[in-house]
Length: 136
Image (cartoon, helix red, strand yellow):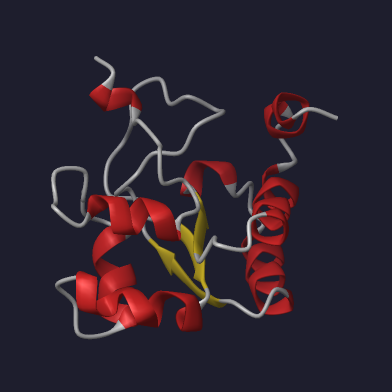
């Protein structure tokens, strides 16, 4: 089954994020946008726990006109889950004194123009990502 088949299904977001964590050992952070949660707060939190990840829900920061159902919207809150032990070694490359302050920042603030962006993208397991806003 292709990644496209998996991700395009409207009810498969939990399965997709779990598969990402299981298939990318370098992945330390993942999230599900608020618009994708479909009232599955409990299931998302349980999945994070089952994967041994910390979890926190951040409120949506702004409305996205015509949101793309296939792609994430960065800096707009969501259900964040992370592996603290995988992030801690990178703290010296980041302007934060703790993993929690780092997660609290990137969940609701854009880091796209920050000099430490590649570090964050690496932690998301997407070191070569190009955002839609960058392709315009």
